Image (cartoon, rainbow, N blue to C red; front, top):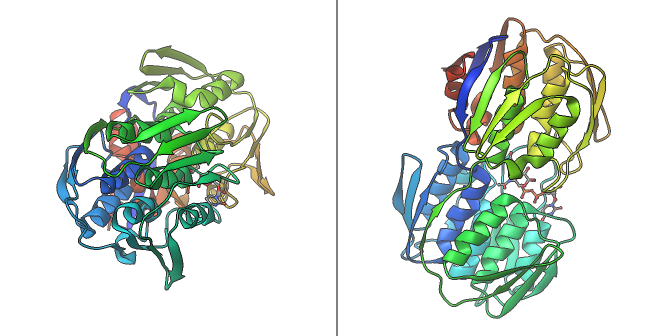
Length: 419
Ligand code: EPU
């Protein structure tokens, strides 16, 4: 699994339709939400990617029964046979932190491995732990595990010091079974969180979205199961839309919700790429003359950090100097040395990448450093002249469903090599 590489012969014209899969970052907390009830859940549109498989295994380890076939997960946790989420199951993913809130809420005990995931910065979890402690959980960190105990969680008032996606999801899930009312202020409200709120509401949770990004949750003693369709993945959408901006490609991205990626569409409009939106399809009309731009990553609805690396590859083709400021994570520029190996001219100063375009990229041997960086490097390989080998590409499969196959169907010359 870990030893794989992708080989691309670049500069092939891509054309045709590509269908976007369900959102990994919606499906992850939604699967964790199944812990909150002993009833059955049916999820459809679940992407068959490594992070989801890891989450499914972790849930089985604590007592889940079910199956994951053809993008559908049926899952039921009639009783919890263990509060343990071991390191060896979860170490590549951040899913364990999402299990913590619901598990302590239903079981009163959780021992979950400290989260792994992409090496993109100091991914702190202090807001998660502080919120759960205020709800009444006793929490210790021992030997790489978070050990949490509680007789009964209680409602709290907590305002996040900064917006956190999984922090909001975790405390929101815990609050649905806590005694009394919880007020959560300064919540992240990414589309994945709205989708989680829809699921929890269908499970019988009482959640109100107030002004100023606050949520008010009235705790229930039990919640029921639900059927749920996962929303399409806005980062996968953005990645294929960016692929459509190169050369004389003609890509139509299907199963999209354009509203989710307005920030990217605005950037593309400003740099001169034509976009045609038809309900849930987006057609990209590339231009040979891309203008440079300055962009900063922000929580939703701002420009997503998860598209920063892919936009960087695109801006290597702009005529002039672009700057991307990464405001969310402090080490999310590891793709840049790799893009420079292909001939890009990018310099990092503090948290800003300065991209000097336009540069002709040529093939080379480069290495994936994290999930979204992998996608940015594939995009680099697609426009580079000659052969590009992307090593360590298992990272890609943590979050992109069938990306080599999807690109190949669009006309790319791309091969996955498993050793
Ligand atoms: N933060 C804290 N304390 C906390 C939590 C977060 O200081 O307790 C800081 C982080 O260090 C970071 C910022 O707040 O600087 C935002 O982090 P956030 O908690 O929002 O990130 P996350 O929940 O760990 C999710 C996605 C990421 C995505 C970020 C930002 C999931 C499973 N992961 O991570 O997705 O980049 O939100 O939108 O939803 C990816 O899919 O490639 C990915 C990395």
